[in-house]
Image (cartoon, rainbow, N blue to C red; front, top):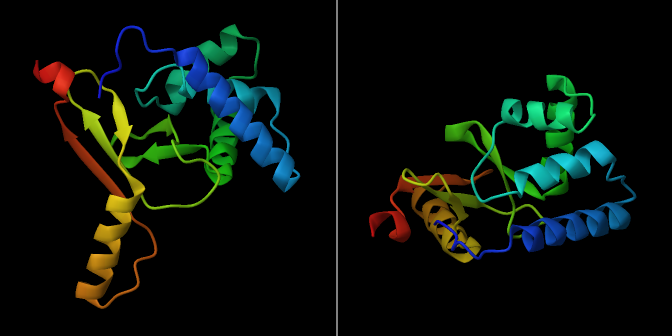
Length: 154
């Protein structure tokens, strides 16, 4: 849902970087400058961003902006659990619950383009219900809803 005009994206960015650094430290990994910059760019707002949309800013910042470099950084951040990929948009967004694998779901507003991560408990309940009714083991769960957020509706 769209963020209010006084929303502090800098706080989101700093929180995401702190979480990523902490996770890297716990796992003996490195948050390299390019990985950190990609994470910062993803958290600049709450709209999903495609890998190729990151390239111009990375080049402007003096990083190697070749697609493989960006995809390696994104793969690292996905594996670390600090970003998600929204398949229908082929784009990436910061994770509200970083550091562990969990079922994912998003509401993407067709008006403003913002994406909101759905509550984990609701997605887990749906996945558990489907597991029981299908008598199947669900390996992954990615739900994507689209529509119009409250702010765009008004």
